[in-house]
Image 1 (tube, one colour):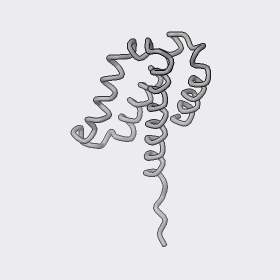
Image 2 (cartoon, rainbow, N blue to C red):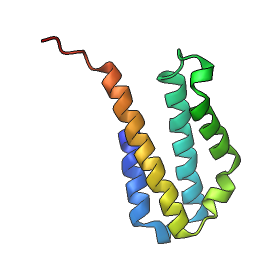
Image 3 (cartoon, rainbow, N blue to C red):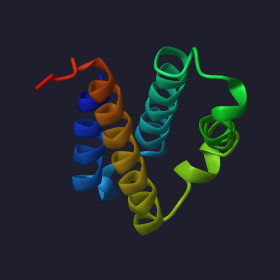
Length: 104
């Protein structure tokens, strides 16, 4: 799912000047949904005190969606770049956990 979202972010970056506020908002909400899903699925069994970083990020994005959506194109693009990197990292970490360990 994160791979699809990363592609959506990249596509949004290429057509950034043509995105409406609704398009931007939908993308940020989608990113937020993915962050919440990662928190629930990959970090569900991790003690809460070790997940403060993602809980803080989720709360921050949730409370500032309208400000993010209203950013100038260059600022919004930087936000998308950071979310793209974060999603790729979270996806990579999730897949690393699922791979069987190679025994030599």
